Length: 112
Image 1 (cartoon, helix red, strand yellow):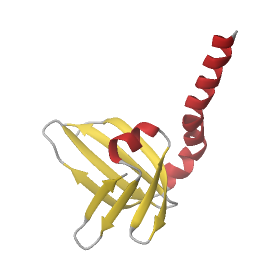
Image 2 (cartoon, rainbow, N blue to C red; image 1 turned 30 degrees about the horizontal axis):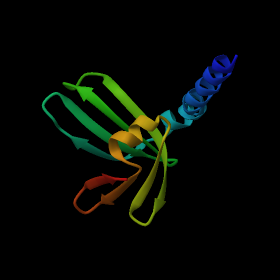
Image 3 (cartoon, rainbow, N blue to C red; image 1 turned 90 degrees about the vertical axis):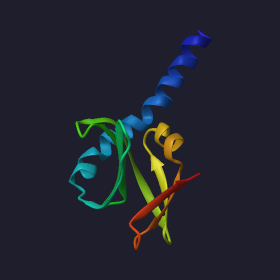
Image 4 (cartoon, one colour; image 1 turned 135 degrees about the vertical axis):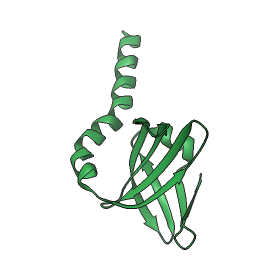
């Protein structure tokens, strides 16, 4: 019984972020992109898009094809720093939870 209860709690906690994004998806998709950043690599190109309504998306594409990973989220802004709140915590593990934007140089730097 303990294992059943524990597995139920783990399932609920792990699915809550996905459920929250399902609620926000229509507003996310309706929000136009304000800024876009791109990092080109041999196999995977990475993109980070800042959208209206405090949304962002980090995704990767293999050879300019369809997105093979996507990590959307919301942000809050403090000066020139964005505090990133990913729906999927793996996005924060990849990039960090803060981003510093240099609009003059069109650069973005991620850190924890």
